[in-house]
Amino acid sequence: MHGGEDARAIVEASRAIVAADAERAAELVDAIAPTCARVFLASGAVADGAAIGVVEHVVAKGENATAIAKRYRIGTGLIARLNRDYDARSLAVGRRLKVIDCAHQPLRLVVVCSRFRLLVWRGEILVAALRVGLGAAATPTPRGETRVVLRARDPEWRDPDTGRIFPPKHAGNILGGFWMAFAPGDDARFKSIGMHGFTGDSPEVWLEKQGSHGCIRLLQDDIAALFDLAIEGTAVSVRD
Image (tube, rainbow, N blue to C red):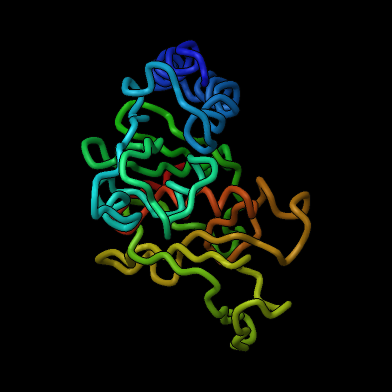
């Protein structure tokens, strides 16, 4: 079990981040990020977890993974991520599951472009801080407000430069098996923009750099975690 000090540290750091100037906030985010990952993205009970939205769900008769995920507004994959020896096909009545309650306090994503960070917030609590790659100078990542409207595993990819379409799992498909599309918005600024993994080059070439056609690139482990966390309807804010 993670001690109550982890939950307290996350609460205190989250408050400090909100109150700090941009420079100090960035330092605080990176300092607490490993604790957030340990608590919110890995198995293991959390003492005082309710204070940060980590709760225990007891499986009732007739419940399945889809119903549980819907109740807490999380992806079904997150339940598997947070619980050892988990099998969605054989959920025993009475089993205690670690989940994040995003129904009473929905998640929101904040992309801080100047810091190349994607922050996942649950209310005033920081859940995750992920490093990203962003749009190139000629094709910048749009700023503004949007939401996740589609999550897809192993989608095809159309090369915006050549128009060539690469099928799922093709070596030329650089999405890394994940696509999370944004709502275009009234002015269509987010049309064809979203978040995905990136297998087109090694991380040192693109991570925390500008290089995409506007989409947000993440490391494979990070996009997999985000895919499990941020379901359709999750609010997204992209800012400088």
